[in-house]
Length: 279
Image (cartoon, rainbow, N blue to C red; front, top):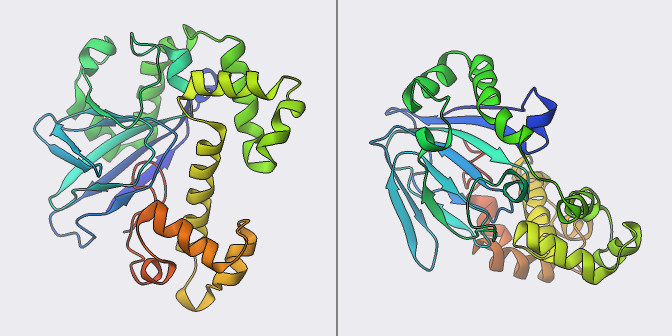
């Protein structure tokens, strides 16, 4: 696997885009053919060669096609088909960014969905096409990021901010540092107003988003440690679980694996699209 991840260099763009990334599996690479993609409150634009296929097992249902596509925020763990060589250049958006960027005519947040992306229609400055951009990502990541910044800058400058997006941004900054029930007081608004604004912008509840962030932090913590260094009782306490059985039930529900099984299958992808992944 070749994998890089870089932030936007333009503040106006970085307000809405968390990072750009590249992942490639070459014919001789040895990696898991069907990695998992964890629940994610962020949306991604996946830029791919026009004839390259993709498949997501969404359990229930599936989504597949060829070429570039949008991967919207999703509640459940997805299984990917990485059995064949592939290359993806990605854009990871901040949570709720689509609300302000108005990339889609329907202003209702889109969840648990994969859609074909018509980049030449949405980005008139993309003269060279997807393959030129992907080749640039392989040869010169910094120059590729500059190109992506230039593509997204007009969208960022024409974004729409209102009281709902402003409240949501403040809530996201404080979401993982305290109790959800206290957020309203911290942000000087009623809890009902906060919940309604957050759902309007993201399509998620505060609790759903906090749970996804917690799972990502937990699995990244585990991924960075050897099996001998993992103390499940200590981890349960660190991440706010009442006890080890509570942690076991949580992981089983979220990723379909017990802690011991996950420990053995460390090649399981944490977030192959814009995060930590196996090599």
